Length: 302
Image 1 (cartoon, rainbow, N blue to C red):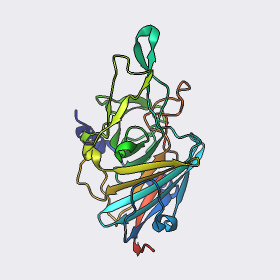
Image 2 (image 1 turned 120 degrees about the horizontal axis):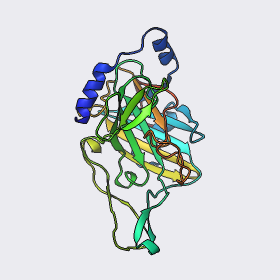
Image 3 (image 1 turned 180 degrees about the horizontal axis):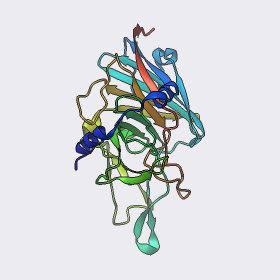
């Protein structure tokens, strides 16, 4: 079954919360305002444009990272732009480095994991719990910036979360808050990613990269992104068309509001792994339900 077929089946199973539950979901949602600007920012991870200084910041706390995540949004023409920043003591620019084991005459994958930032956008109508222990199925659009795998090419990865009671081809079994069994499938969008593997069978050095950059293609090339680490802080800028017309993407209408969440770590439904340099990698989670709306009033660049 394809990811879109699974998604369509999931959509028929979803019923939006009603009554008090819906009110609680709505009232608990912090709000990000996307401001219209006359000149778009440059996606370089520097964020030195005046519009970013004047855009309203939304701050949400990530307890796993023990850090506040700051988000801003603007839109111009046919595109929307995001600025994300968070404190990080170390710049992690390697991922799964291949480490040579002389006595075994082979490489093993090292414990290093890259720095990341994740947007998770609901593709469902009405209030929704976007966590990986939710009690209802959903689909979500995932924007996954990766310091090693996507940043060198100037992109974020574009994927989906299909959270369903129906097992997918590569899904992971997870338990909901009520103990219900669900399956989390994380397919990439149609096209090619911004990275490729470079598996080495023969000795090429004691430590060699496992991934290399390439030009993404298709729907997986929708999101431009660039991150810069400086003085203990990551600054990451994102850009995407408001409307991509791809079935595996969320489409933005400036008259509507959108529910989303963010995470410092990859959201993959995995447990914390103390053997990794970043033990929470893959165990990231949405901790606050956020809402984005558009302000249809131009803020001019100075």
